[in-house]
Length: 391
Image 1 (cartoon, rainbow, N blue to C red):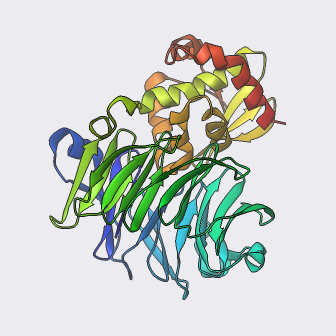
Image 2 (spheres, rainbow, N blue to C red):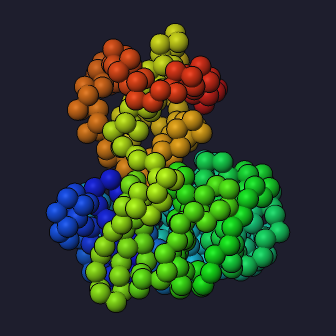
């Protein structure tokens, strides 16, 4: 059993299926309306992650690909126990206790699964992984490793009893047997906090880390301080949305949710998805306003940026901007929010099409720059950072 989310739905894996419940109906009417459903699966997924178009799941040995557009479902029996799973827009990475594997989301065939050779030099067993930018952070044996996506080992840090590693734009967050540790991208410990009970699940968004155990649901800030917690409420699993936490109550057999503001109090920061997307495109417009040529290219549903005739992946723009506006990290961390870009662009007439290219409507720059009062303060640095992505 597990839960995950995208911009419109909360996905619940249960009883050999995954169902997608409408967030709008749940939050506005309190109704559990199923708007998406997978085919019946060989195993109930215990792991879930999104790529651009697909919800991926893993049971014990089965890897599943479910099309979020129509629910079409395919499976691969990997014949080895799958321990953890992560993804970016285009690729899925997963681990067994003895290896790290990669699969192109569009080429869902067992023969296409690639084992990374770096697996052979890691201490065993391999327990957990997550992805950030060009790197994988992998917990294996008594070590935390930093590994290039193409397989080269960049660094390592002794770390015992690791249960889960989660990616943050500043570096990994490691959950051990009783601690939550915030580390730099060079794996130096910045802060840590303690939790009680047996670890069940952890998620990390833009501002906090959420940990579900056998005794508590806890929220940790970047200082390592536990800023909120509630005693165990029969939750079997959970997932984090922008402004809500969604739970599955095992005792009641029911999907439920909580407002983050009720849980976090003064630490709550409301996130508006439209405003967040506005910050992304205001930043691109600032690059053009500074005298550079910016075009967007949309091919097979992927939006990429062309800066001064050089290609820049949109997800790298998300990641670069996260250090200025942390809420943008949600767009990077969960590709399930990617669909919102098109509806946002249509609503604001953001794009002007010129043949196969899409030009930014720069007349909207001033409106978008007012979304955050600190935008103009950061603008010069933002322009430099985006230009650095273009080489």
